Length: 467
Image (cartoon, rainbow, N blue to C red; front, top):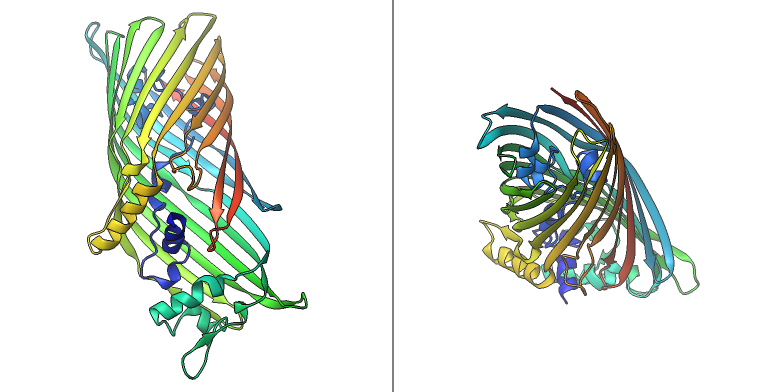
């Protein structure tokens, strides 16, 4: 029943005045692995290590490790592969895209030899998520069409004589007002293709400090902005009793979200002994202002399309709590040095919220769905670095728990990462590779679940200048 509610709100918005989905807050809450090559190659386990501009977005106390100035830029290429399996009928698709990583600056000021020894001011533009992907799903021999199962009932319920499916000729209207369609009987072959593009970027302004090389603290004001676009085509072919095709129609949908928000992050790192660092950070919810546009088009004997109004509403992401531990071996003068680090992150996705000033009832319905289908999730990150003079070898592993209640869906993923770095006193160059994989399910109008397997390959490079 819950899956049906979600599908009604998201996939079949043509029959509703609203196009919002209960899944939308997850798009901006469940972040991926992106940023600098150093951060990626350690699978993000930098919470207690610090010394990287990406600290501003996770534990800003890590900026307190800096004792010099730095300007950094990162970019790369993203290769996304998606496989689908509908009861043995397999299909696959892929998409390659440019991947912006980050641009950032850290300025360090020495304040004394004791107590507060250094303070840092930092600015960053960091990409936190890339929505790039393409999915193709096929079903053959379906006994109930989308038209008969969903559209015709929706037209009757809404008394919608101007519906796009009627205007395109998929559904016929008799003189007495009754509706009928050739898609009320037969068997059907279906293809659903979805292309997703977009990103979540965050502009960050950070302040941090170093107290006697034992306590590091930091705070960040984050201003994220996001663009998400989904272009989907649903094609349904009718097969008659003789096994022949009676043609097909295409139902095209475009969903576009533009969002901007604000959040605050606070963190600390304690170094009780030289080789041990313990870190903690808290992230407030991000409060997003969202503009939501939806367009649909039906192509059959003729074409008919409709553009919905632009809806505006607010989305709230959950609080995040981070704990970190790092073991540090050697120093900058050692021929062989390195770190081993681990991060833990907790987020309760049940706490995601919609805020709608003009429709409290619909807001309540969506928030109730969120409360019923999401749950808290734990993320674990592990990373290591081996320094051999100017060269560094890095590797990492991360796993994020499923934010959905298990029977609803699966948005967990695993990351295997590796990288190499070259660092001098004046500049550095880092290269990273990440393999991010996960499984999920796509539900059709009749609650039929297609198994999806996603693998993402990210190659990222970072160049930094120090002075």
